[in-house]
Image (tube, rainbow, N blue to C red):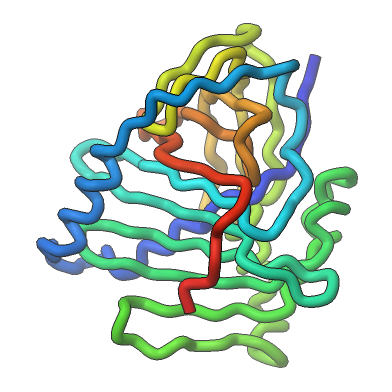
Length: 234
């Protein structure tokens, strides 16, 4: 049986990490996030087949370990303007933090059609660091790069294929009983990614509890999530 779902995946905006030195303050924030641990347990009433309906306030925080490098990726729905959801993605590394917001319509249609062209990016805002000004991209400038931002946000289409029934998965966010084990392929504007992952219907936005890349053994684990409470950072 093949499971198919288009998921909102945090855009790994790690521009501040490219060639930058370690910032002790940022490094401590990363360590603090990775030190979190929840004793909460979550059951699944059935297999993961699609993400839950979107709602303002939903968020997920994932820790990514790539060799000796660690980063924290937070993705949240922080508002709605007309039929467009405001998605905020933030990347925290030992070198710095970058945050991006996008106003995106058509996410529900993408879930049904599996066609990223059904999604439309209305505007993009970016901020690199607390003291930096917010940069807004819209109009003609956005029209020339809209597809790039769209692919970065959704990871295009994530194709799931069950690979081993269900499993109990323990991550910093808690214990998730009945996780659906599946292989996934994500096509993005950077490259194609393949991973072995565990997905749970209790988790909003992308359902991902844990995944391991088959290319380089990069591990992504759920640190925290919520169905409400997420707000804009700027």
